[in-house]
Image 1 (cartoon, one colour):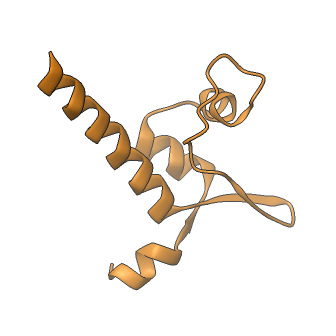
Image 2 (cartoon, rainbow, N blue to C red; image 1 turned 45 degrees about the horizontal axis):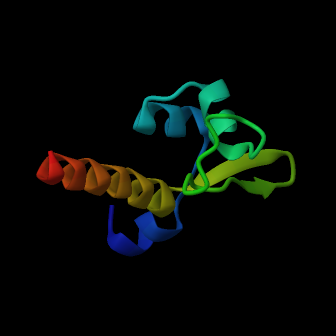
Image 3 (cartoon, rainbow, N blue to C red; image 1 turned 30 degrees about the horizontal axis):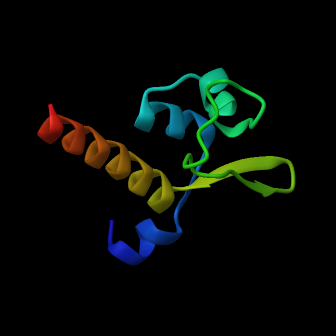
Length: 77
């Protein structure tokens, strides 16, 4: 898959679940500001009529940001 394709590719929720290892309810908790699990950095969903998708590039960036935070924490410890 080339960079341009990845940047614009949209994925469905089951693909998102598989990529990040979270369940459907955990994903929606991360998106809900009223939830104690809310994560303002979590990639926002894109509504397409009756479908919900996520931009693959944003999901991959979010994963990288979490890894970078972990690495910073490891350096401080």
